[in-house]
Image (tube, rainbow, N blue to C red):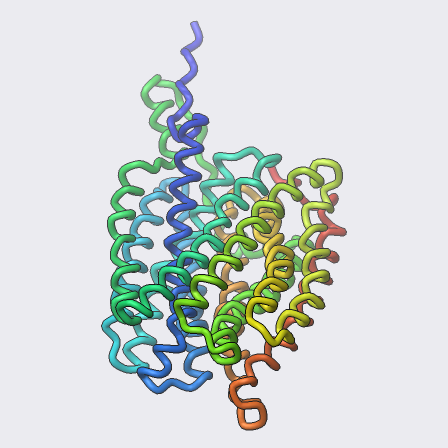
Amino acid sequence: MASAAPKTPAANTQRGVRLTLWLLLIVYIFNFIDRQIVNILAEPIARDLGLSDTQIGLMTGLAFALFYTALGLPIARYADRPTSSRPRIIAIALAIWSLMTALCGLAHNFVQLLLARIGVGVGEAGCTPPSHSLISDLVPPERRSSALAFYALGIPIGTLLGMLIGGVLADLVGWRRAFLLVGLPGIALALIVTWLMRDPRHDASKALAATGVAGPTHAPQMSLGEALRSVARSRAFVLLLVAGSTAAFLAYGKTTWTAIFFQRTHGMTPGEVGFWFGVVNGAAGIFGTWLGGWLADRFGAINRRHVLTAPAIGMALAAPVAFLAYQQASWWAALTLLVVPTICNSLYYGPTYSAAQGLVPVRTRAMASAIVLFFQNLIGLGLGPLFFGILSDVLRPQFGDESVRYVLYGAAFLGLIPAFFFWRASLRMNAELDRHT
């Protein structure tokens, strides 16, 4: 008589999937609170420590991104091993970056602050690659864009909360205590993740072992060379990489310097910018991120190329509206106009990571996410704020505090570059997406 089939592992039940998705979203919110709070605190930090705009760009971007990207690939390789516990990796990473965020508040000079920000990058490198791999194992391909967009809601929600909480705390207790109060709760969350989150690979193995039924033998992990070659063979993946990296370059650069723009050009305090820009930008980003995932699943089911159609159109539409927003003489008019480009520029999160997961073999999913993150964060987070800061310093002798406004003028129209590459990648979706089983 045939043995009874094992019960569905807890991690794969509907309730288990929802629990995992919500936990991952909360972790990612903490990820972006700790990553982005430095943007709203940058101006008071600069005044206190005497930093130049170039140093602000280095602190908010490159120092974090270099170590984030360097460690992302080996952590992804470890997460792709069938025996690795992805929830444990995420929990350890969360504890590290939360502690290092708190230590930012103890810095008394630029070097100390730079080292603490590097520590935040070291911790955060262990978050998204295993998270994307976990979600892709739990959710079927036809729902993958929406699931990854749900996870990506952590970006606008975390950015919103980072600016809102950071701005309020900066006005009330100063930037040092703001870092401490924001960083320490993440350590408690790491314990909750360890306790509640399960890896479906392990639960499936345990369920099979309990019944005495021999489970399928895990395929051996691809060598690093094989994994990289499998990713590079996808022309669509390469185009997507260029599109996502340039989009991130602009997103990180504009977020940092738009917050400073409102303080310098419009005379707002960190608390005012944190509230108004944080809430409006965050709400628009949340809607745009959700909408991008929904559009990708809805219209991608009709024609696979439409997985990336919304990001291509959105980036193109955002450019002229953003340019108009930075021209406004009043902060409320600028902020109102920025709602449209923020929604349009947020459409790419879910579709980009969903397509990245569907363009590579299953055994390289964490590696695929790590590669996308490597370029997005090295080029985007690493160079975006720094490049805009250097340009601001170059233009400052001529334009004074208005130099940031002129930098943002150029940034607005650079959005046409990722729009082009998203469109080019979309043309290859029918041939390449989900061809791997």
